[in-house]
Image (cartoon, rainbow, N blue to C red):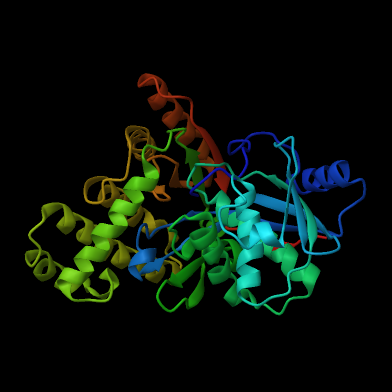
Length: 399
């Protein structure tokens, strides 16, 4: 998430059925029911942070927290969009949408999808849209990709566009990169569109090949606890760009297309060729994180779900010490969760705030959540929120 989409309730907040809210919002705004509703999920990245733009591997899964777009066609090349927490509708036509920067704020994510479709040669139908969401903004659960994927699904269906699911993530990413101006990788959009219920999405960010890896938490008696740290994002955009630039410089110095091309067995030799200690630490994180993704996938394929916990914790230590993208609230949540019996815990998302995920015994989730809350109180941090999640499906039409 790289900008404000719409303010939403925090994880676990009682907010009503999001699909119903989208339909009600459409009727209230436009005076008639929508033609349909399309949903796309937020995502948590089980493991594989800052590997995506290094052509590496990631392992996200979709959340039950969703963004829902209620929509109907309207004549001409005009698009009107409403959000449940915005008093005013935003309307734009072809002239505005074809010039990046004309549509700003949360509506830019919608305009960006229209723009990307048009740039790719699709005849995008005019539409009226109403948006509701349970995906919290600024928490590292990718509310931006959720809105892009839901809007894209709606427009593809309304226009009868021939756009296969495997090609949709790259188009949604282009909307965010080139129209909104956020330099995200392909992971978030891939997860929002291509995930399956009960599975994690093993994505090769170079080839865009995917494999749906069984992630049956119920059968293992486990759950993933997602804790919103409530930490404000601190200089996240500039720091993200700095990390990406360091990785690209390191790849150039090492003579490889991307850090994905440095095998973990050759890591020490590669590090010895770099003079800058900060760049060495950035490289070490990316190379070892790619290997942790591969190791996690191997364990999940074998049904050894409980054994991935130490890999999650090692990932967090690497983000904290080598990539330096955690903050005190995040580290406190991880430490408290592990002390309370979590099998593993790590920050998820781009860093400098956001969420922590902890792998826990299902009947122990509340105990872990209380321990994190107590640790926050001891340090006078804002009270965190939490939700227990299972892997959910990607973008889909609801009705």
